[in-house]
Length: 80
Image 1 (cartoon, helix red, strand yellow):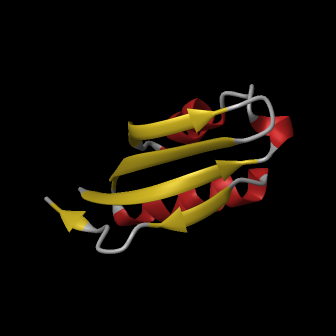
Image 2: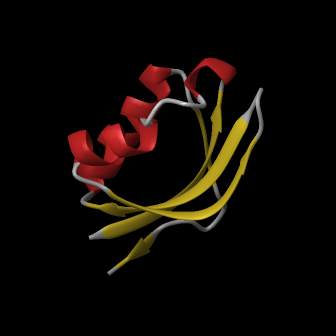
């Protein structure tokens, strides 16, 4: 299993959608919320994602396809 930390920036129309839940369920990823800031107009969440390398790639592609901006954190990959 690999871990990856990312910051997600949600556009206003996705703030109330269960995007992280849908990503976790569809891509077989375990998300761990490290930090979150949500307002009426913007959402920003720092997540630690855990899963296979392929699942991590699929999860990031899923989020980007939904319109979420995915920013990797420096030194983010930890293999276990």
